Length: 487
Image 1 (cartoon, rainbow, N blue to C red):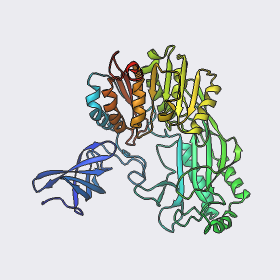
Image 2: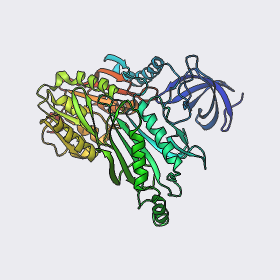
Image 3: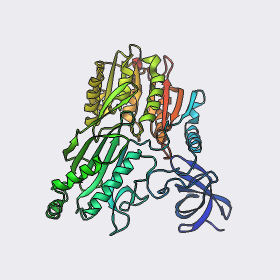
């Protein structure tokens, strides 16, 4: 075979996978074996693909077909490889742990050589673990029947039914199928993202794994959705969504024989044009607008759009590991919990700490954190709404310990410098994206910190994602000490 060129269709075996989903396929080239990076091609599979990028002797391909499954692979979910969710459906769970562990250990090798390693901790549940799902109304093919489900992989428009999704709570499938059937029978149109016409947009379902309480929200267009050219059409269409229709949907859900129990059913109006789930107006059709969950002895009130870990039992493993790493450091300490979300970690640390300050940019999450801290009787937690980069300039109390749980893209470089300038002896970094952690570690290591202890928690079985937790320490007198940089 000659030199690899764009448009060539080839076949080869996947020899490894880099985080999060880049399979390496070996094929024969004019100067020997060539390697091509193919997204979503899994280790051990033989795949066909088309070359779509060539640069400097490096090649990328687009997956066309799995010619032969890996030896360990079984059928898996009926939507495996079709929807944009799971990556490793059909692989034995233990095999997926090995793949993720190898990926992350390889990325962090230069920073973990001397660290105590706690391994990769599995999720207590491998299926039915997701406690939150956002489903979209649409059709499986243009002009087809109404579908309620997930986006087809690589498609902005096509929807595949997700009633049989095996990583979502089993109650969700019953609610999805009943909702799709109910509105299809009544010929209620879905919202078309190109013409901005139609009614049905999304179904948001959440459930507390430990209390069994469940919340479902039907998201539709509002009267103001679509702009001047389509407001009239939408108002005409929305006449179909009468109180009787909504009442009927409520009764349809309430009569289902679910394992959990419904705490609330909501109707949410969303006027934004794009495919985003948000609330412009909310109506309670049944019960309340929130539900309650319990984790590690703490109680949490959760609304439709509150941030909360999507795997409750996995979260208990994750937060248990964080608590183990900080337990010896918290006694009587002033703690910063940066990127604190709804304040779960802050509240866990508050039991032993003198005081905890949480900083989070999402105002709704901060309000939820304050409410949950009061709900749990904690008086030594304060939560501040704002960007970490700016808020740190205004906090007078200086930390003894810092906990970092940043978003997927990691920490802003300027914010990271301010954090390191405090010169605390111990920090805990919780990362949901190891490539961001690796990038941040270059700066962290340059400030004299090393990873003392670390581990992984598989919060998202059968997907390409994994949480990493690192206990960072620095010797006294290391550079970037606060007494030097802030004098």
